[in-house]
Image (cartoon, rainbow, N blue to C red; front, top):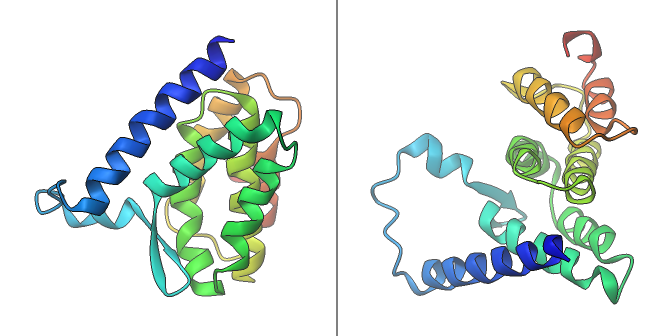
Length: 164
């Protein structure tokens, strides 16, 4: 019960922040360029913010009681509208979103999305800093006590299994 309350509160907070951002009441000028770039995902020809992914993931997790495929549909919706270059650029931000997750299902959903984006990118070339992010995700995955290792699947795809 506590888990669902936390998600609902987080969703409400994220939706308020998103509304402020859309209305222009949030000042983005003070952000440094790398942080600004890191906080955005390229999504087709328009920009999808990581904040939007957080909100849509929270909604998908909230909808799981009504639709058991909500999280899978969330991943498919993101992947179907993205081209290979944008998919490649989106891998690291999605993995950073995975590192923020506190439950195993949302963590695995983010890692699965990153793997789907890697497939769409059609390359085994890995983004810069991928190995360090995968190492920290591996530790996070162990804390969540997951048996099935999505991080190892990602490392295998990018041919960096020995590095993590």
